[in-house]
Amino acid sequence: MSLAVLIPLFPLIGFLINGLGFRRVPKSLVGVIGSAAALASFACALSLFLNFSGQPEVAHIFDWITIGDLNISMSFQIDQLSLLMLLIITGVGSLIHIYSIGYMHHDEGFGKFFAFLNLFLFFMLLLVLGSNYVVMFIGWEGVGLCSYLLIGFWNKNTNYGNAARKAFIMNRIGDLGFLLGIFLIITHFGTVEYADVFSKVAEGGYESGDKTLMYITLLLFVGAMGKSAQIPLYTWLPDAMAGPTPVSALIHAATMVTAGIYMIIRSNVLYSLSPETLEVIGWVGTATALLAASIGLLQNDIKKVLAYSTVSQLGYMFMGLGVMAYSSSFFHVMTHAFFKALLFLGAGSVIHAMSDEQDIRSMGGLRKKLPITFITFLIATIAISGIPPFAGFFSKDEILAHVYEHNKLMWVLALAGSMMTSFYMFRLLFLTFFGEFRGTHEQEHHLHESPIAMTAPLMILAVLSAAGGFFNLPHIFGGHASLATFMEPLFAQSHVEAHAPDEATEKMLMIISVIAALVSAGVAYVIYVSKKAVPDADGTETGLQKVVYNKYYIDELYDTVFVKPITALSNIFSSFVEFLVIDLIVEGIGKLVKGLSGEARLVQNGTTGYYIFAMVISIAVMLIWGLRIFILG
Image 1: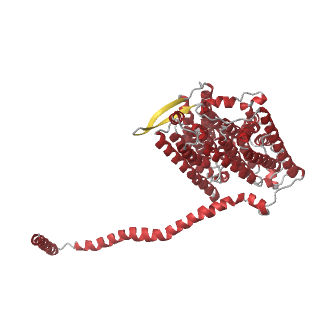
Image 2: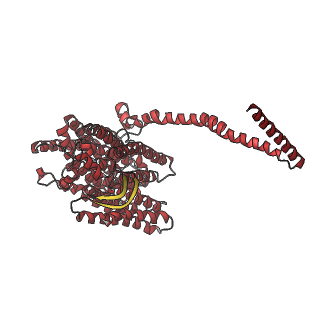
Image 3: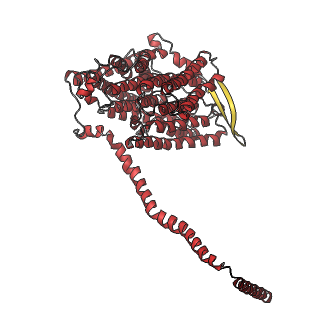
């Protein structure tokens, strides 16, 4: 279990070396130190996974908080869920670290970037390793801090700073719900340890629909809505594109946005007895998947398309959670980590070649100049679109099958979202890599494939995106659903299980899903390759198209309903309350005392006769006062 302690320790050491030695550690060593720290964590996680006995183990580090009967320890838990999360975080995280060596090499904040990247990894590992909700919350808040630092990394740009603050504030809104949920757990169960809480629920005779569990799970879900970008707290994630592209890959693929899904799967005992909460989760996930996918249809910034794609895919994961398909949902977390990291890093390779250009309308024909980037990006596009035999097909269709058994309307909407996903991803692929180059002559002159430090991670992720689905190959294809079997012990205390359709129905659903994805890809091909259509310049859209292009004006709505009233109230407090209360009362009292003391000090004039006179007068006053008391009794 000492390896469990080393897993987060290595990134922390990398942060301390690069962070404290910023501008002193040689630039040639900065990336090596940061990447080596991530790789060392991956090696430890892999060793733990290979030697795992199948029984959960807890590594107690020290007692942290003891108040009465409540004891909160700093301890790590190794089980099926934490091991899988560790492999994803450290594995994909290591590839992103290596990629960053090439992508960020010329940035003046190179050392600071790797320090923040290592710190991000440390807190995410802490989040998934903790054996209780409080340790999870430390990691939860830590990744929120690091997202702020990394999204606003280029802080000389005001818009990037605004995006960082937006992410920080919206996550704090969700975190309040999460914190209240933890308080309710402490109040009701007297502990925050996963094993103790779940045992008390499993053995305490709780029935499905218990109100206390409903309140706890709803509050925890509010936290998940913020961290994993679900309606209404999703708008921070597309703006998170302000950070360097490796940051986008890390946040969107392997770390921060998966925290909400991880937390719900970890708390499956509570959620399985809260059908009302599960219904909310399912429909919020459905709405998020549809809304984000529709916005992605018309975006022209290569990273914004991928950002809304992430929000949409997270919606599918929550759909799976809502129908208690916990292992299916996690399967999609895993495959999504592969192909979404590949898509973002591929986009970074394109941006690198295009001299920081991100508008796909200024690209085109790049497959000839960037062959490795193109092939790997194509694999990721096929994977996310749900086309067999690549990873996304198996994980997404597994969720859709469970959704079909639970609610047919939800399945129809999920299928519509899947069709939109296929369309906007192939739209992105065709506009970027096919046709004629539409950028400037100078951009065309500098087009080149990225260095090996960037293309090697792309190739590794491409293999995982192509073959990742075989980790949980379903029985109808001759597989043994290995991932689901491995995760089964996690759900032993949950007495309700998701219902999968029969084999014939499952095959039918898969055929429908594949046909829908291929049709959408074909429509995108006809429009953007055969007809060579290119989206118009900004501001030319009309009607519904304009509404969708402007993201349904939800940011503007939030600005009108929340931001502007709070700003106006702040101005009122600044102009009036500060003047009338702070200045006149607080500062006024200070000035009054200062003025009186200034006058009173003149009494001390240094004349002996004056002092004797004052003493006589004082004695006379005291005698008169004393005599008065004596006479009046």
